[in-house]
Amino acid sequence: MNNFQKSLAYGKVAEADVTLWLKQEKEWCVLPVYDISTDTGKGPRLLTLPTDLVVPDLLVMREGEIRWIESKRKTKFVWHGIAKEWRTGIDLKHYFDYIQVEERTGVPVWLFFLHEENAVSDADRLRGCREQVCPTGLFGAPLWYLRDHEAECGKFTNGWRNHPMVYWNHATLRLIASLEEVHVYRVPAKLILAEEEVYTF
Figure 1 (tube, helix red, strand yellow):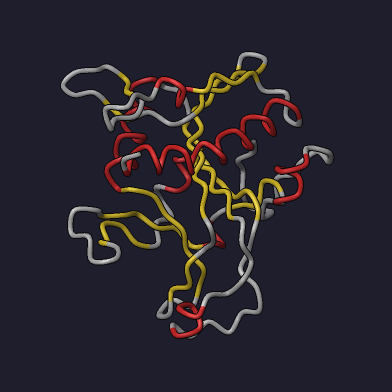
Figure 2 (cartoon, rainbow, N blue to C red):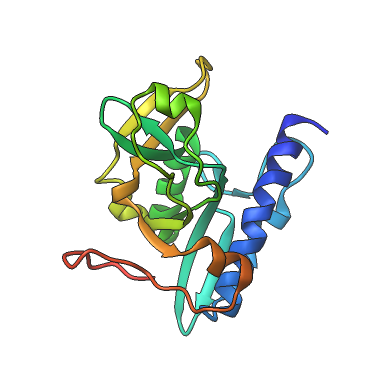
């Protein structure tokens, strides 16, 4: 199994959880675009000019509404020592593709992050984290909002000079559902919003 296949298998766990949650709790009709992925090392693409674009995992529909959803399975948030906040992120190239997908199709894109472990790592402690637990659950926000609230863009991770990322802090994202709600599918999920926020899911 190559790296793409391993990454795909790991991510599909989140995609399956989020798909069932969207279908059962939110009553969205879900088209799992990730099923189009191939063994060539490439995920599903939107065929456009001048170049094809990586598309989000899911296309969901409900009563005339349509949205793209990219769901990322993460072990945990990472503590940023200078900013003193939890952060998470995605591949920068994919982020730019999602922006173009939204612009080309006119369909809103949402980013979902499923964070599953609450233990604070030794590395986070070394970076100055004094929190007792790391946040868990299904977090997310619409792309139009995230574009205006990037914590860091273009940073290279783990010494990989060919793998720039874009990051958001925990406070920028909204808790869409608890880990238990996503895993068990019993209690309808709630979207927690600050009073001034205007987006809903």
